[in-house]
Length: 103
Image (tube, rainbow, N blue to C red; front, side, top):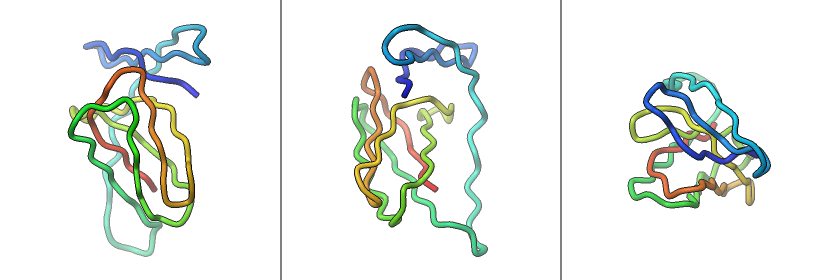
């Protein structure tokens, strides 16, 4: 998986793939959560203090898709490891604050 290295002002994310080379990855606009309906369950984790590893206890009962955003609402790449159907770890190269949306 890729790890975030830097975000530059032009909204590009640089990530290291397998610790070998650097690649530029385009940034998509953040998704907007829509509540209601019979859709799947979601959980949003807020990491207000920067950390290199986020522990996300989502308690969804399945392995969710995880989208990670900066506090400025830019979607970024991070390494995601599902520990169980109720817990996910998110890894960063440098301490990062933001939010993770699990769905």
